[in-house]
Image 1 (cartoon, each protein chain N blue to C red):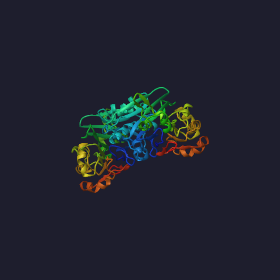
Image 2: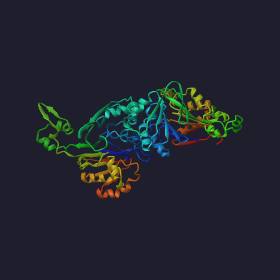
Image 3: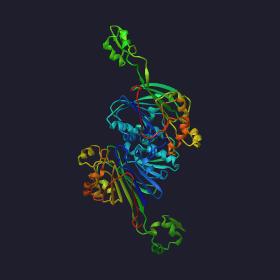
Image 4: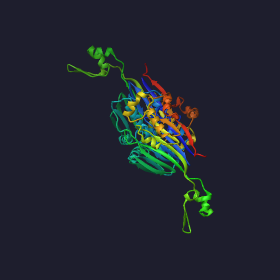
Length: 303
Length: 303
């Protein structure tokens, strides 16, 4: 099971009634956070998620509304007695930017391991998550993220038997171990059926609506996407600042065909995103306006 | 009139129901902020105070809970179309620390002018405020601040007349201008009576209760002071981390005899500061537990 919580839905600046956009996911005891604007630690606490289990933080880019809360977040993790290293992923320069911010959080009881992204796409395997970072089109280098939890095939006893694999190896092979015994090597694929559908979440903000976003979000279980403006008259403003309207985002969703589609990163000038949802749904009927704390638990197909 | 708003009352970390400690004052159209932890811009918005008129920001010290909100605050000021320079006052190193944080707010439409404090006491005259910064006793260099609005004497027409000062100069002299006419110099004190009592606010956090604090807060209209712990058993913890209990603070107030006394900078572990006020009031009866958004307008004596 993959838990997903949209910690905030604001863009540009935090408001008294709206936290800045950030996504927290939890799988197999390991939490992953995408973006950390001012106040993210507060909304985490409000929704009861723990800091200690955050193993990975991904940054889309370095505009303040996506990273300004990180020093406080690190101190909250330290206060939760985190000792294990934290993996920090972001565009080239993430180590420099985080080091600048750490002028007020210089001492931490855990190590930061940086992964700096470059190029149009990068695939990573981190703490049980398969991560694909893909470059977006914003006013500074910015990446979207697809998180996948792969799922092995079902155990196939008949196949194992047919290949004369000793029974004592079945369980470790099923768990993914490779075993060598008396010069013979047994691999997990020898006892497993075809790979099954895993879980997929795509997160995308801030950007203009380039077509490849739909490829990265294709058939996702959840597609979380910027929809900064609802008023169609704000299209020019969206283009100027390299953002998307809710309709831009909905057209991407229509191409990507995700199971669920949440809009987020709302302009401070848009107090009621839900007012525009009727028109958004004309483009993609399953669209939902994000809300602070919006939550979902995604399960494998037959769980 | 001097407006004062305690924007938050938390110490160490922001909580869903408690903003970090910061004080905003407004006098003659010029606002002054002391400290700016994560979320200060949000509580400013919540209480309806404007960013544009903030001319001065004073930092007590560089622990994250006192400064982590500054990049976002600067961007909120930029968004409010501030163009005039901002004076930033803090301990030695304030320019280096703010520059580090500005890695995520590099471009601002206004200039920052830094004043770095050194020594046990420094007096400044900034944007109509007479500021006395005084060194505290914390785990890093930390200053308290006394803000004073001085008040000139009443206009005394009889004195002006007796000194044969031309009537056309009375008004500018009353307003504080010095005038030279035909080789004769007229100064404001020639037409004004004795100086009248001004307004005084003292702000003090984070520190152990050193006696000089009471001298700086002597007869203040408002003394805002750290009272991190209410449980008397936390005294050793307060000593270890160079903080004060509510009783330490109340004893300072008893020596300083301010008109009003607000406690703030409450530990995240203390959810109900008001539970301890009965014992605090035994030491200083006028003591009040601070609350987020607690507000006061201070007036000159006969206004």
